[in-house]
Length: 312
Length: 249
Ligand SMILES: Cc1cc2nc3c(=O)[nH]c(=O)nc-3n(C[C@H](O)[C@H](O)[C@H](O)COP(=O)(O)OP(=O)(O)OC[C@H]3O[C@@H](n4cnc5c(N)ncnc54)[C@H](O)[C@@H]3O)c2cc1C
Image 1 (spheres, each protein chain N blue to C red):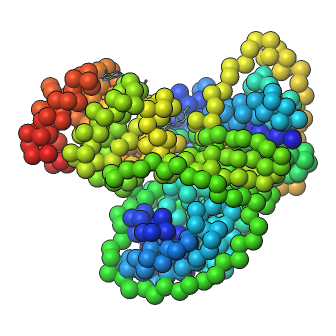
Image 2 (cartoon, chains in turn cyan, yellow; image 1 turned 90 degrees about the horizontal axis):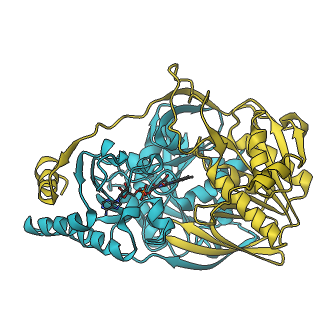
Image 3 (tube, chains in turn cyan, brown; image 1 turned 90 degrees about the vertical axis):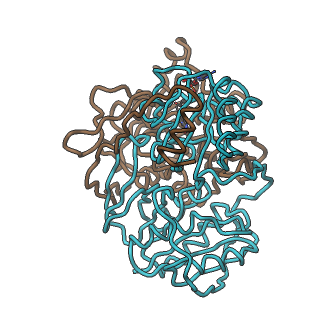
Protein backbone atom coordinates (compact mmCIF):
# COMPACT_ATOMS: atom_id res chain seq x y z
CA UNK A 1 0.00 0.00 0.00
CA UNK A 2 1.13 3.53 -0.71
CA UNK A 3 -0.80 6.70 -0.12
CA UNK A 4 -0.25 10.09 -1.73
CA UNK A 5 -1.08 13.13 0.39
CA UNK A 6 -1.50 16.44 -1.38
CA UNK A 7 0.02 19.32 0.53
CA UNK A 8 -1.75 22.55 1.31
CA UNK A 9 0.55 25.53 0.83
CA UNK A 10 0.63 29.00 -0.65
CA UNK A 11 3.99 28.44 -2.42
CA UNK A 12 5.69 30.36 0.41
CA UNK A 13 4.89 28.01 3.28
CA UNK A 14 3.29 24.71 4.15
CA UNK A 15 -0.08 24.79 5.94
CA UNK A 16 -1.06 22.77 8.98
CA UNK A 17 -3.79 21.04 6.98
CA UNK A 18 -1.01 18.96 5.39
CA UNK A 19 0.14 17.38 8.67
CA UNK A 20 -3.49 16.70 9.59
CA UNK A 21 -4.06 14.96 6.28
CA UNK A 22 -0.94 12.88 6.91
CA UNK A 23 -2.58 11.69 10.15
CA UNK A 24 -5.61 10.63 8.15
CA UNK A 25 -3.36 8.91 5.60
CA UNK A 26 -1.68 6.93 8.38
CA UNK A 27 -5.10 5.51 9.25
CA UNK A 28 -5.51 4.33 5.68
CA UNK A 29 -2.15 2.58 6.10
CA UNK A 30 0.95 2.06 3.97
CA UNK A 31 3.79 4.32 2.90
CA UNK A 32 2.96 7.99 2.79
CA UNK A 33 4.37 10.39 0.21
CA UNK A 34 3.48 14.07 0.11
CA UNK A 35 3.02 15.96 -3.15
CA UNK A 36 3.88 19.63 -3.10
CA UNK A 37 2.65 21.02 -6.41
CA UNK A 38 3.23 24.71 -6.96
CA UNK A 39 5.58 27.34 -8.24
CA UNK A 40 8.65 28.22 -6.23
CA UNK A 41 7.37 26.12 -3.34
CA UNK A 42 10.63 24.43 -2.40
CA UNK A 43 10.53 25.75 1.16
CA UNK A 44 7.08 24.19 1.56
CA UNK A 45 8.44 20.94 0.15
CA UNK A 46 11.32 21.00 2.67
CA UNK A 47 8.84 21.48 5.50
CA UNK A 48 6.70 18.60 4.25
CA UNK A 49 9.71 16.32 4.62
CA UNK A 50 9.80 17.05 8.34
CA UNK A 51 6.32 15.68 8.98
CA UNK A 52 6.43 12.43 10.96
CA UNK A 53 5.61 9.34 8.97
CA UNK A 54 6.35 10.74 5.53
CA UNK A 55 8.42 8.46 3.28
CA UNK A 56 9.19 10.99 0.55
CA UNK A 57 8.16 14.38 -0.72
CA UNK A 58 7.44 14.81 -4.40
CA UNK A 59 7.97 18.39 -5.46
CA UNK A 60 6.48 19.42 -8.78
CA UNK A 61 7.31 22.94 -9.88
CA UNK A 62 5.44 24.39 -12.84
CA UNK A 63 4.22 27.83 -13.91
CA UNK A 64 0.70 26.46 -14.33
CA UNK A 65 0.71 25.21 -10.74
CA UNK A 66 1.19 28.63 -9.19
CA UNK A 67 -2.52 28.89 -8.36
CA UNK A 68 -3.16 25.14 -8.22
CA UNK A 69 -5.85 25.43 -10.84
CA UNK A 70 -8.06 22.33 -11.12
CA UNK A 71 -7.01 21.32 -14.64
CA UNK A 72 -3.29 21.57 -13.87
CA UNK A 73 -3.62 19.78 -10.52
CA UNK A 74 -5.60 16.99 -12.16
CA UNK A 75 -2.87 16.38 -14.74
CA UNK A 76 -0.15 16.46 -12.07
CA UNK A 77 -1.85 14.11 -9.62
CA UNK A 78 -3.18 11.62 -12.16
CA UNK A 79 0.31 11.22 -13.66
CA UNK A 80 1.60 10.09 -10.26
CA UNK A 81 -1.20 7.70 -9.36
CA UNK A 82 0.33 4.55 -10.90
CA UNK A 83 2.41 4.30 -7.77
CA UNK A 84 -0.40 4.76 -5.23
CA UNK A 85 -3.50 3.02 -3.93
CA UNK A 86 -5.08 6.14 -2.49
CA UNK A 87 -4.79 9.90 -2.70
CA UNK A 88 -5.84 12.17 0.15
CA UNK A 89 -6.14 15.94 0.25
CA UNK A 90 -7.48 18.43 2.77
CA UNK A 91 -11.07 19.46 2.01
CA UNK A 92 -10.50 23.17 1.45
CA UNK A 93 -11.90 24.66 -1.74
CA UNK A 94 -8.55 24.56 -3.56
CA UNK A 95 -8.58 20.79 -3.29
CA UNK A 96 -12.30 20.23 -3.61
CA UNK A 97 -12.02 21.97 -6.96
CA UNK A 98 -9.67 19.40 -8.52
CA UNK A 99 -10.06 16.16 -6.54
CA UNK A 100 -13.28 15.17 -8.36
CA UNK A 101 -11.39 15.60 -11.63
CA UNK A 102 -8.75 13.19 -10.36
CA UNK A 103 -11.48 10.78 -9.24
CA UNK A 104 -13.17 10.88 -12.63
CA UNK A 105 -9.92 10.21 -14.45
CA UNK A 106 -9.28 7.20 -12.19
CA UNK A 107 -12.93 6.09 -12.56
CA UNK A 108 -13.30 6.22 -8.78
CA UNK A 109 -16.10 7.45 -6.54
CA UNK A 110 -14.56 10.20 -4.39
CA UNK A 111 -15.15 10.06 -0.64
CA UNK A 112 -15.53 13.68 0.44
CA UNK A 113 -14.80 15.42 3.73
CA UNK A 114 -14.11 12.37 5.86
CA UNK A 115 -14.10 12.86 9.61
CA UNK A 116 -12.89 9.41 10.60
CA UNK A 117 -11.16 6.34 9.16
CA UNK A 118 -11.44 2.94 10.82
CA UNK A 119 -9.87 0.09 8.86
CA UNK A 120 -11.38 0.33 5.39
CA UNK A 121 -14.42 2.31 6.58
CA UNK A 122 -14.67 6.05 6.10
CA UNK A 123 -16.90 8.26 8.21
CA UNK A 124 -18.40 11.38 6.69
CA UNK A 125 -21.14 13.83 7.64
CA UNK A 126 -24.07 14.17 5.24
CA UNK A 127 -27.21 16.33 5.27
CA UNK A 128 -25.45 19.28 6.89
CA UNK A 129 -24.09 17.00 9.58
CA UNK A 130 -27.51 15.77 10.66
CA UNK A 131 -26.48 12.25 9.71
CA UNK A 132 -23.16 10.45 9.59
CA UNK A 133 -22.47 7.93 6.85
CA UNK A 134 -19.98 5.08 7.19
CA UNK A 135 -18.86 3.87 3.78
CA UNK A 136 -16.46 1.34 2.31
CA UNK A 137 -15.00 1.77 -1.13
CA UNK A 138 -14.71 -1.01 -3.68
CA UNK A 139 -12.56 1.09 -6.00
CA UNK A 140 -8.97 -0.09 -6.59
CA UNK A 141 -7.67 3.47 -6.10
CA UNK A 142 -9.30 5.65 -3.49
CA UNK A 143 -9.77 9.40 -3.76
CA UNK A 144 -10.47 11.02 -0.41
CA UNK A 145 -10.78 14.58 0.87
CA UNK A 146 -10.23 15.06 4.58
CA UNK A 147 -12.09 17.33 6.98
CA UNK A 148 -8.86 18.45 8.64
CA UNK A 149 -10.54 19.72 11.81
CA UNK A 150 -11.23 16.07 12.68
CA UNK A 151 -7.55 15.02 12.68
CA UNK A 152 -4.65 16.13 14.88
CA UNK A 153 -1.54 17.17 12.97
CA UNK A 154 1.24 14.58 12.65
CA UNK A 155 4.41 15.50 14.55
CA UNK A 156 7.52 17.11 13.22
CA UNK A 157 10.39 14.66 13.59
CA UNK A 158 10.64 13.39 10.03
CA UNK A 159 13.51 13.69 7.58
CA UNK A 160 12.08 12.53 4.29
CA UNK A 161 13.93 13.40 1.12
CA UNK A 162 12.48 15.72 -1.49
CA UNK A 163 12.48 14.51 -5.09
CA UNK A 164 11.68 16.88 -7.88
CA UNK A 165 9.44 15.63 -10.65
CA UNK A 166 8.26 17.40 -13.74
CA UNK A 167 4.66 17.63 -14.85
CA UNK A 168 3.29 17.43 -18.35
CA UNK A 169 0.30 19.72 -18.11
CA UNK A 170 -0.47 20.85 -21.64
CA UNK A 171 -3.36 23.05 -22.67
CA UNK A 172 -5.81 23.43 -19.80
CA UNK A 173 -8.35 25.80 -21.38
CA UNK A 174 -8.30 27.96 -18.27
CA UNK A 175 -6.13 30.89 -17.30
CA UNK A 176 -5.62 32.80 -14.07
CA UNK A 177 -6.56 36.47 -14.33
CA UNK A 178 -6.42 38.00 -10.87
CA UNK A 179 -7.00 37.44 -7.18
CA UNK A 180 -8.45 39.57 -4.40
CA UNK A 181 -7.34 37.95 -1.17
CA UNK A 182 -8.76 39.16 2.12
CA UNK A 183 -5.76 40.47 4.00
CA UNK A 184 -5.48 39.53 7.63
CA UNK A 185 -2.88 39.06 10.32
CA UNK A 186 -5.26 36.83 12.23
CA UNK A 187 -4.85 33.06 12.33
CA UNK A 188 -6.42 30.99 9.58
CA UNK A 189 -10.07 30.25 10.24
CA UNK A 190 -9.97 26.47 9.81
CA UNK A 191 -7.01 25.95 12.13
CA UNK A 192 -7.59 28.66 14.75
CA UNK A 193 -7.85 27.87 18.47
CA UNK A 194 -10.49 30.54 18.97
CA UNK A 195 -13.03 31.72 16.42
CA UNK A 196 -15.19 34.80 16.87
CA UNK A 197 -18.12 34.84 14.46
CA UNK A 198 -20.77 37.41 13.65
CA UNK A 199 -24.12 37.07 11.93
CA UNK A 200 -26.89 39.18 10.51
CA UNK A 201 -27.45 40.58 14.00
CA UNK A 202 -24.22 42.58 13.63
CA UNK A 203 -26.23 44.88 11.37
CA UNK A 204 -23.37 46.20 9.23
CA UNK A 205 -19.78 45.65 8.20
CA UNK A 206 -18.64 48.55 10.38
CA UNK A 207 -20.18 46.94 13.44
CA UNK A 208 -17.86 43.97 12.98
CA UNK A 209 -15.21 46.20 14.55
CA UNK A 210 -16.93 45.37 17.86
CA UNK A 211 -15.94 41.75 17.27
CA UNK A 212 -12.53 42.55 15.88
CA UNK A 213 -11.45 44.16 19.13
CA UNK A 214 -12.31 40.94 20.93
CA UNK A 215 -10.71 38.75 18.27
CA UNK A 216 -7.49 40.79 18.51
CA UNK A 217 -7.38 40.44 22.27
CA UNK A 218 -7.90 36.67 22.09
CA UNK A 219 -5.72 36.08 19.02
CA UNK A 220 -8.80 34.63 17.37
CA UNK A 221 -9.79 34.11 13.76
CA UNK A 222 -12.92 35.83 12.49
CA UNK A 223 -15.86 33.97 11.00
CA UNK A 224 -19.40 34.75 9.93
CA UNK A 225 -22.75 33.29 9.00
CA UNK A 226 -23.93 33.15 5.43
CA UNK A 227 -26.36 35.98 6.08
CA UNK A 228 -23.52 38.28 7.14
CA UNK A 229 -21.55 37.41 4.01
CA UNK A 230 -24.56 37.74 1.71
CA UNK A 231 -25.29 41.17 3.19
CA UNK A 232 -21.75 42.21 2.26
CA UNK A 233 -20.65 42.81 5.87
CA UNK A 234 -17.60 40.56 5.54
CA UNK A 235 -15.69 38.61 2.84
CA UNK A 236 -17.02 35.30 1.50
CA UNK A 237 -14.12 33.31 2.89
CA UNK A 238 -15.32 34.02 6.43
CA UNK A 239 -18.43 31.89 5.99
CA UNK A 240 -18.65 29.02 8.44
CA UNK A 241 -21.08 26.22 7.73
CA UNK A 242 -22.26 23.35 5.58
CA UNK A 243 -21.34 25.18 2.43
CA UNK A 244 -18.59 27.35 3.87
CA UNK A 245 -15.71 26.34 6.12
CA UNK A 246 -15.79 23.73 8.85
CA UNK A 247 -14.12 24.79 12.07
CA UNK A 248 -13.56 23.02 15.38
CA UNK A 249 -11.71 25.44 17.65
CA UNK A 250 -11.29 25.26 21.42
CA UNK A 251 -13.72 28.16 21.63
CA UNK A 252 -16.34 29.31 19.12
CA UNK A 253 -18.07 32.56 20.00
CA UNK A 254 -21.23 33.14 17.93
CA UNK A 255 -22.64 36.65 18.07
CA UNK A 256 -25.91 37.67 16.44
CA UNK A 257 -26.14 34.27 14.77
CA UNK A 258 -29.42 32.36 15.04
CA UNK A 259 -27.92 28.89 14.61
CA UNK A 260 -29.47 27.56 11.39
CA UNK A 261 -28.75 23.89 10.58
CA UNK A 262 -26.37 24.99 7.84
CA UNK A 263 -24.37 27.14 10.23
CA UNK A 264 -24.26 24.50 12.97
CA UNK A 265 -22.88 22.01 10.44
CA UNK A 266 -19.67 24.02 10.30
CA UNK A 267 -19.05 24.65 14.00
CA UNK A 268 -20.80 22.12 16.21
CA UNK A 269 -17.61 20.11 16.66
CA UNK A 270 -16.02 23.04 18.50
CA UNK A 271 -14.85 22.12 22.00
CA UNK A 272 -16.66 24.98 23.71
CA UNK A 273 -19.38 27.11 22.14
CA UNK A 274 -20.44 30.45 23.57
CA UNK A 275 -23.27 32.52 22.07
CA UNK A 276 -24.55 36.04 22.44
CA UNK A 277 -28.04 36.60 21.07
CA UNK A 278 -30.92 38.79 22.17
CA UNK A 279 -33.46 36.08 21.38
CA UNK A 280 -33.45 33.49 24.15
CA UNK A 281 -35.20 31.03 21.82
CA UNK A 282 -32.44 31.21 19.20
CA UNK A 283 -31.42 27.66 18.18
CA UNK A 284 -27.76 28.53 18.73
CA UNK A 285 -28.43 28.24 22.47
CA UNK A 286 -29.33 24.57 22.05
CA UNK A 287 -25.69 23.82 21.18
CA UNK A 288 -24.00 26.53 23.25
CA UNK A 289 -22.18 25.63 26.47
CA UNK A 290 -22.51 29.22 27.59
CA UNK A 291 -25.30 31.48 26.41
CA UNK A 292 -25.67 35.17 27.06
CA UNK A 293 -29.09 36.57 26.24
CA UNK A 294 -28.30 40.19 25.54
CA UNK A 295 -28.17 42.94 22.98
CA UNK A 296 -24.79 42.51 21.33
CA UNK A 297 -24.24 46.24 21.07
CA UNK A 298 -24.22 46.39 24.84
CA UNK A 299 -22.62 43.00 25.50
CA UNK A 300 -19.63 43.23 23.15
CA UNK A 301 -18.07 46.40 24.63
CA UNK A 302 -18.63 44.90 28.08
CA UNK A 303 -17.02 41.66 27.01
CA UNK A 304 -14.00 43.51 25.67
CA UNK A 305 -13.68 45.42 28.95
CA UNK A 306 -14.04 42.25 31.02
CA UNK A 307 -11.32 40.57 28.95
CA UNK A 308 -9.07 43.55 29.62
CA UNK A 309 -9.69 43.10 33.35
CA UNK A 310 -8.33 39.56 33.25
CA UNK A 311 -5.23 40.59 31.38
CA UNK A 312 -6.20 40.55 27.70
CA UNK B 1 -24.73 28.93 -26.80
CA UNK B 2 -26.67 25.92 -25.51
CA UNK B 3 -26.71 25.76 -21.73
CA UNK B 4 -27.36 22.58 -19.79
CA UNK B 5 -28.44 22.83 -16.15
CA UNK B 6 -28.50 19.67 -14.03
CA UNK B 7 -31.05 19.89 -11.20
CA UNK B 8 -31.43 17.54 -8.23
CA UNK B 9 -34.45 16.89 -6.06
CA UNK B 10 -33.30 16.93 -2.43
CA UNK B 11 -34.65 17.20 1.09
CA UNK B 12 -35.71 20.82 1.53
CA UNK B 13 -33.00 22.89 3.20
CA UNK B 14 -35.36 23.90 5.99
CA UNK B 15 -36.10 20.32 6.99
CA UNK B 16 -33.85 18.57 9.47
CA UNK B 17 -32.81 15.13 8.21
CA UNK B 18 -33.95 12.16 10.30
CA UNK B 19 -31.95 8.95 10.34
CA UNK B 20 -33.94 5.74 9.83
CA UNK B 21 -34.05 3.51 12.92
CA UNK B 22 -32.44 0.65 11.00
CA UNK B 23 -29.48 2.94 10.16
CA UNK B 24 -29.85 2.28 6.45
CA UNK B 25 -30.08 5.94 5.53
CA UNK B 26 -32.08 9.12 5.95
CA UNK B 27 -35.88 8.91 6.05
CA UNK B 28 -37.27 10.69 3.01
CA UNK B 29 -40.89 9.55 3.34
CA UNK B 30 -43.47 12.31 3.82
CA UNK B 31 -40.97 15.15 3.97
CA UNK B 32 -40.77 18.29 1.88
CA UNK B 33 -38.46 17.94 -1.11
CA UNK B 34 -37.18 20.83 -3.23
CA UNK B 35 -34.66 21.68 -5.87
CA UNK B 36 -31.12 21.72 -4.48
CA UNK B 37 -30.56 25.44 -3.69
CA UNK B 38 -27.27 25.62 -5.60
CA UNK B 39 -29.05 24.23 -8.68
CA UNK B 40 -31.69 26.96 -8.34
CA UNK B 41 -28.86 29.48 -8.56
CA UNK B 42 -27.60 27.70 -11.69
CA UNK B 43 -31.08 27.79 -13.24
CA UNK B 44 -31.39 31.50 -12.47
CA UNK B 45 -28.02 32.21 -14.09
CA UNK B 46 -28.94 30.22 -17.20
CA UNK B 47 -32.26 32.04 -17.54
CA UNK B 48 -30.51 35.40 -17.19
CA UNK B 49 -28.09 34.38 -19.94
CA UNK B 50 -31.05 33.57 -22.12
CA UNK B 51 -32.70 36.90 -21.33
CA UNK B 52 -29.48 38.59 -22.43
CA UNK B 53 -29.50 36.43 -25.59
CA UNK B 54 -26.18 34.90 -24.57
CA UNK B 55 -27.79 31.49 -24.22
CA UNK B 56 -29.67 30.30 -27.29
CA UNK B 57 -31.34 27.41 -25.51
CA UNK B 58 -31.52 26.24 -21.90
CA UNK B 59 -32.12 22.62 -20.93
CA UNK B 60 -32.70 21.29 -17.42
CA UNK B 61 -31.74 17.68 -16.74
CA UNK B 62 -32.61 15.70 -13.66
CA UNK B 63 -31.56 12.17 -12.82
CA UNK B 64 -33.87 10.64 -10.27
CA UNK B 65 -37.22 9.09 -9.45
CA UNK B 66 -40.54 9.93 -11.14
CA UNK B 67 -40.99 12.87 -8.76
CA UNK B 68 -37.82 14.51 -10.07
CA UNK B 69 -40.10 15.68 -12.86
CA UNK B 70 -41.44 18.27 -10.42
CA UNK B 71 -37.93 19.62 -10.02
CA UNK B 72 -37.59 19.93 -13.78
CA UNK B 73 -40.99 21.70 -13.89
CA UNK B 74 -39.68 24.18 -11.33
CA UNK B 75 -36.75 24.95 -13.62
CA UNK B 76 -39.10 25.28 -16.59
CA UNK B 77 -41.32 27.64 -14.59
CA UNK B 78 -38.26 29.78 -13.83
CA UNK B 79 -37.73 30.10 -17.59
CA UNK B 80 -35.74 27.12 -18.84
CA UNK B 81 -36.85 25.95 -22.30
CA UNK B 82 -37.16 22.20 -21.92
CA UNK B 83 -36.22 19.24 -19.77
CA UNK B 84 -34.62 15.83 -19.88
CA UNK B 85 -35.60 13.39 -17.15
CA UNK B 86 -33.36 10.38 -16.70
CA UNK B 87 -35.50 8.15 -14.53
CA UNK B 88 -33.97 5.93 -11.88
CA UNK B 89 -35.04 4.87 -8.41
CA UNK B 90 -31.48 4.20 -7.35
CA UNK B 91 -29.66 6.78 -5.27
CA UNK B 92 -26.82 7.26 -7.73
CA UNK B 93 -23.32 8.29 -6.73
CA UNK B 94 -21.76 11.42 -8.27
CA UNK B 95 -19.55 9.28 -10.53
CA UNK B 96 -22.57 7.64 -12.17
CA UNK B 97 -24.46 10.95 -12.32
CA UNK B 98 -21.49 12.61 -14.01
CA UNK B 99 -21.30 9.81 -16.58
CA UNK B 100 -24.97 10.23 -17.45
CA UNK B 101 -24.61 14.02 -17.60
CA UNK B 102 -21.66 13.64 -19.94
CA UNK B 103 -23.80 11.57 -22.30
CA UNK B 104 -26.64 14.10 -22.10
CA UNK B 105 -24.27 17.01 -22.71
CA UNK B 106 -22.85 15.28 -25.77
CA UNK B 107 -26.26 14.32 -27.12
CA UNK B 108 -27.47 17.90 -26.69
CA UNK B 109 -24.33 19.60 -27.95
CA UNK B 110 -24.14 21.73 -24.80
CA UNK B 111 -21.42 24.37 -24.70
CA UNK B 112 -21.87 25.40 -21.09
CA UNK B 113 -22.97 23.34 -18.13
CA UNK B 114 -24.08 25.40 -15.16
CA UNK B 115 -24.55 23.38 -11.98
CA UNK B 116 -24.57 23.50 -8.21
CA UNK B 117 -21.24 23.22 -6.39
CA UNK B 118 -22.73 20.62 -4.08
CA UNK B 119 -26.00 18.84 -3.35
CA UNK B 120 -27.09 19.60 0.18
CA UNK B 121 -28.11 16.00 0.84
CA UNK B 122 -24.99 13.95 0.20
CA UNK B 123 -22.60 16.90 0.43
CA UNK B 124 -20.10 15.25 -1.94
CA UNK B 125 -19.38 18.39 -3.96
CA UNK B 126 -18.00 16.14 -6.68
CA UNK B 127 -20.33 15.91 -9.67
CA UNK B 128 -19.33 19.13 -11.46
CA UNK B 129 -15.62 18.42 -11.18
CA UNK B 130 -16.04 14.84 -12.34
CA UNK B 131 -18.16 15.86 -15.29
CA UNK B 132 -15.68 18.50 -16.43
CA UNK B 133 -12.82 16.01 -16.40
CA UNK B 134 -14.85 13.36 -18.24
CA UNK B 135 -15.60 15.91 -20.97
CA UNK B 136 -12.04 17.25 -20.90
CA UNK B 137 -13.44 20.75 -20.36
CA UNK B 138 -12.11 23.46 -18.04
CA UNK B 139 -14.07 24.24 -14.89
CA UNK B 140 -14.90 27.37 -12.95
CA UNK B 141 -15.70 26.12 -9.44
CA UNK B 142 -17.68 28.20 -6.91
CA UNK B 143 -18.74 31.04 -9.20
CA UNK B 144 -19.55 34.41 -7.66
CA UNK B 145 -19.84 36.25 -11.00
CA UNK B 146 -19.87 35.01 -14.59
CA UNK B 147 -19.22 37.19 -17.62
CA UNK B 148 -19.57 35.80 -21.09
CA UNK B 149 -17.60 36.75 -24.17
CA UNK B 150 -16.98 35.26 -27.59
CA UNK B 151 -15.92 31.65 -27.02
CA UNK B 152 -14.94 32.21 -23.40
CA UNK B 153 -16.13 33.02 -19.90
CA UNK B 154 -14.66 35.11 -17.13
CA UNK B 155 -15.53 33.58 -13.79
CA UNK B 156 -14.93 35.17 -10.42
CA UNK B 157 -14.59 32.31 -7.94
CA UNK B 158 -15.12 32.18 -4.18
CA UNK B 159 -11.90 30.58 -2.92
CA UNK B 160 -10.48 29.84 0.53
CA UNK B 161 -8.69 33.17 0.83
CA UNK B 162 -11.10 35.48 -0.98
CA UNK B 163 -11.92 35.81 -4.67
CA UNK B 164 -10.10 34.64 -7.79
CA UNK B 165 -10.87 35.49 -11.41
CA UNK B 166 -10.17 32.98 -14.16
CA UNK B 167 -10.82 32.87 -17.86
CA UNK B 168 -12.23 29.65 -19.29
CA UNK B 169 -12.40 28.63 -22.90
CA UNK B 170 -15.75 27.24 -23.96
CA UNK B 171 -17.10 24.60 -23.76
CA UNK B 172 -16.84 24.63 -19.97
CA UNK B 173 -18.47 23.61 -16.72
CA UNK B 174 -19.23 26.25 -14.06
CA UNK B 175 -20.41 25.46 -10.54
CA UNK B 176 -22.40 27.99 -8.57
CA UNK B 177 -21.74 29.47 -5.15
CA UNK B 178 -24.24 31.30 -2.96
CA UNK B 179 -23.45 34.85 -4.03
CA UNK B 180 -23.83 34.33 -7.80
CA UNK B 181 -27.43 35.54 -7.85
CA UNK B 182 -30.73 35.41 -6.03
CA UNK B 183 -33.03 32.95 -7.77
CA UNK B 184 -36.45 34.28 -8.79
CA UNK B 185 -39.78 32.87 -7.74
CA UNK B 186 -41.73 31.50 -10.68
CA UNK B 187 -44.86 33.53 -11.44
CA UNK B 188 -48.20 31.78 -11.71
CA UNK B 189 -48.46 32.35 -15.51
CA UNK B 190 -44.97 30.92 -15.90
CA UNK B 191 -45.88 27.91 -13.77
CA UNK B 192 -48.84 27.31 -16.09
CA UNK B 193 -46.68 27.79 -19.17
CA UNK B 194 -44.12 25.33 -17.80
CA UNK B 195 -46.73 22.57 -17.83
CA UNK B 196 -46.68 22.64 -21.62
CA UNK B 197 -42.93 22.69 -22.03
CA UNK B 198 -41.49 19.36 -23.21
CA UNK B 199 -39.68 16.92 -20.93
CA UNK B 200 -37.94 14.05 -22.66
CA UNK B 201 -37.99 10.74 -20.74
CA UNK B 202 -34.81 8.72 -20.64
CA UNK B 203 -33.15 6.00 -18.57
CA UNK B 204 -29.48 5.48 -17.65
CA UNK B 205 -29.52 2.45 -19.99
CA UNK B 206 -30.37 4.74 -22.94
CA UNK B 207 -26.94 6.26 -22.45
CA UNK B 208 -25.22 2.92 -21.82
CA UNK B 209 -23.98 4.02 -18.42
CA UNK B 210 -23.10 1.49 -15.73
CA UNK B 211 -24.52 2.99 -12.54
CA UNK B 212 -23.43 0.29 -10.08
CA UNK B 213 -22.39 1.92 -6.80
CA UNK B 214 -18.72 1.93 -5.86
CA UNK B 215 -19.28 2.63 -2.19
CA UNK B 216 -21.04 0.35 0.27
CA UNK B 217 -22.93 2.16 2.98
CA UNK B 218 -22.17 0.27 6.19
CA UNK B 219 -24.56 2.39 8.23
CA UNK B 220 -25.93 5.88 8.65
CA UNK B 221 -26.17 7.15 12.21
CA UNK B 222 -27.31 10.18 14.14
CA UNK B 223 -24.50 12.62 14.81
CA UNK B 224 -23.17 13.10 18.33
CA UNK B 225 -25.55 15.48 19.98
CA UNK B 226 -24.49 18.47 22.04
CA UNK B 227 -26.31 19.29 25.21
CA UNK B 228 -27.43 22.84 25.72
CA UNK B 229 -25.33 24.37 28.46
CA UNK B 230 -26.08 27.18 30.85
CA UNK B 231 -27.16 30.77 30.45
CA UNK B 232 -24.89 33.37 32.01
CA UNK B 233 -25.97 36.68 33.50
CA UNK B 234 -23.57 39.08 31.82
CA UNK B 235 -20.26 39.55 30.05
CA UNK B 236 -18.31 39.27 33.31
CA UNK B 237 -19.88 35.90 34.05
CA UNK B 238 -19.12 34.73 30.53
CA UNK B 239 -15.45 35.64 30.86
CA UNK B 240 -15.32 33.93 34.24
CA UNK B 241 -16.80 30.69 32.83
CA UNK B 242 -14.57 30.69 29.76
CA UNK B 243 -11.48 31.30 31.85
CA UNK B 244 -12.08 29.41 35.06
CA UNK B 245 -14.52 26.65 34.17
CA UNK B 246 -13.82 25.83 30.51
CA UNK B 247 -10.22 27.02 30.52
CA UNK B 248 -10.37 28.03 26.87
CA UNK B 249 -9.13 31.61 27.27
C1 LIG C 1 -27.95 26.09 0.29
C2 LIG C 1 -27.76 26.82 1.57
C3 LIG C 1 -26.52 26.81 2.14
C4 LIG C 1 -26.28 27.51 3.31
N1 LIG C 1 -25.03 27.47 3.86
C5 LIG C 1 -24.80 28.17 4.99
C6 LIG C 1 -23.50 28.14 5.61
O1 LIG C 1 -22.57 27.49 5.14
N2 LIG C 1 -23.31 28.87 6.72
C7 LIG C 1 -24.32 29.63 7.29
O2 LIG C 1 -24.06 30.30 8.30
N3 LIG C 1 -25.54 29.64 6.74
C8 LIG C 1 -25.80 28.94 5.60
N4 LIG C 1 -27.04 29.00 5.05
C9 LIG C 1 -28.01 29.99 5.56
C10 LIG C 1 -28.75 29.55 6.80
O3 LIG C 1 -29.86 28.78 6.44
C11 LIG C 1 -29.22 30.81 7.56
O4 LIG C 1 -30.02 31.59 6.72
C12 LIG C 1 -28.07 31.68 8.06
O5 LIG C 1 -27.12 30.88 8.75
C13 LIG C 1 -28.60 32.76 8.97
O6 LIG C 1 -27.59 33.62 9.37
P1 LIG C 1 -27.70 34.44 10.73
O7 LIG C 1 -27.83 33.50 11.86
O8 LIG C 1 -26.59 35.41 10.75
O9 LIG C 1 -29.02 35.29 10.49
P2 LIG C 1 -30.44 35.19 11.18
O10 LIG C 1 -30.97 33.82 11.10
O11 LIG C 1 -31.23 36.30 10.64
O12 LIG C 1 -30.12 35.45 12.71
C14 LIG C 1 -29.72 36.68 13.22
C15 LIG C 1 -29.68 36.52 14.73
O13 LIG C 1 -29.18 37.71 15.30
C16 LIG C 1 -29.90 37.98 16.49
N5 LIG C 1 -29.79 39.43 16.73
C17 LIG C 1 -30.26 40.43 15.94
N6 LIG C 1 -29.95 41.61 16.48
C18 LIG C 1 -29.28 41.38 17.64
C19 LIG C 1 -28.72 42.20 18.65
N7 LIG C 1 -28.77 43.51 18.57
N8 LIG C 1 -28.13 41.60 19.69
C20 LIG C 1 -28.07 40.24 19.79
N9 LIG C 1 -28.59 39.42 18.86
C21 LIG C 1 -29.19 39.97 17.80
C22 LIG C 1 -31.30 37.53 16.20
O14 LIG C 1 -31.99 37.25 17.41
C23 LIG C 1 -31.07 36.28 15.34
O15 LIG C 1 -31.02 35.12 16.14
C24 LIG C 1 -27.31 28.26 3.90
C25 LIG C 1 -28.58 28.24 3.34
C26 LIG C 1 -28.81 27.53 2.19
C27 LIG C 1 -30.17 27.51 1.60
